[in-house]
Image (cartoon, rainbow, N blue to C red; front, top):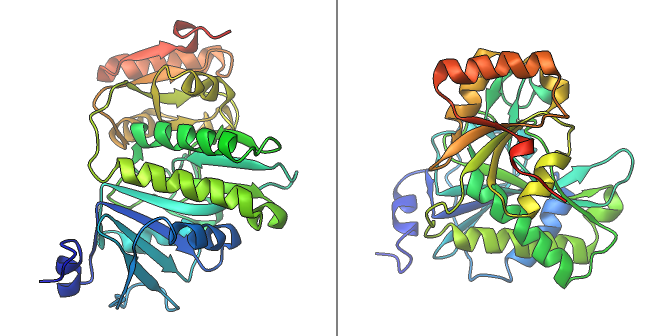
Length: 305
């Protein structure tokens, strides 16, 4: 038997089986720069990869340590639904770039999914990936720690609403990103900060700890979730999927149920950004929550300074 117990099952079939899996794309400058730091943070061994015929053609690489798999893929990560059923892991982390037309310098974390049509043909329309509240929380606070340690004062730290694919994978996942232009994707300090944060989150999910806080499923506000970020920063709760105001026309009963079912948490509830959700939509959603017995609150239940 191989000295690494997580490699043995992999050697017998195409499934990648590891406590935590990290994925980078060759099309993503920030992700590839993060990989350079990640390989220095653990003892990885290169493995031969039996690529399934259903996967896109291209140059793959699999590195494995005792607790992590680090997979490099040839295509964009947002189109990775072809991996469904091939990865068994506690948490899947995509190390990725963030694009900003305004050139905003940022390090970010977010869940995946499409509230309406599929963005840029990534994932399925009206479908959500599995969001993990504790992972989102740890992702944000690990990024905050590294931002302070590396003195990235010019970078904004944040959380984005749920957007883009993949949507069909059967494991919890999150994106951890650095952006927003080619300059930031190649910023050594910034990509190092995100890499170290990814590694810290990964280490915490080798043997996942029980939730200590309930997980909020956010409703309302803008793309960058200011009402929820403020409260996550204050450690009031974990955060799962977030449905922003600009997608509320698509947020019907079906999508509410999906948001609930595709958020992994010991205890969860819907949290409505009162200022970021129109009154009529609030009432419509509250009726749906109460019909299904889903607990809910308004952000006013969590006052901030």
